[in-house]
Image (cartoon, rainbow, N blue to C red; front, top):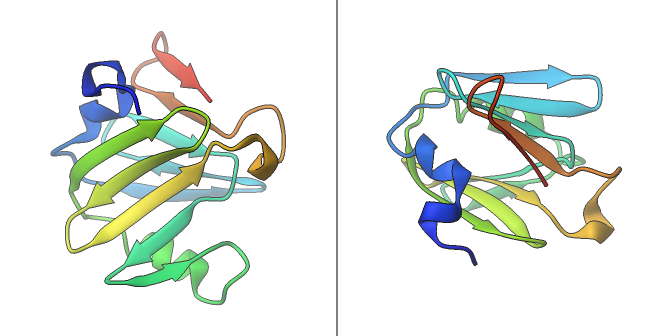
Amino acid sequence: MISSSDNPLAILVGRQLSAVVFVQDYVQFQFDGPVLTAITSPRVSLAGDEWSVRLAGYRDALCRLIGRKVQATSLAEGRELRIDLDDRGTLSVSLKPEDACGPESATFATSPEDLWVW
């Protein structure tokens, strides 16, 4: 696990998830500025229930995260990035090579000049 000072996702703490955008083969999460793009299908957890891309209700579960505030973030290089939201909501993206569907699993942009790629 890297320290919070090395975790670009830490900038999201206190922000709300303002939009979930479904694009052909990836999903974007907008946080009133910063954007997380999940190329590897993210997993979502709400109040103890979990959804992955192949489960019924998956897209609805992702949309139920809209409006929730980020409580914490973590980044485990080569394993997972995770965003914990209020009301026990969690969004996570696997960074494991075996789960990737291409050369990248996720990107995170805070501005046109600041982009992280995993």
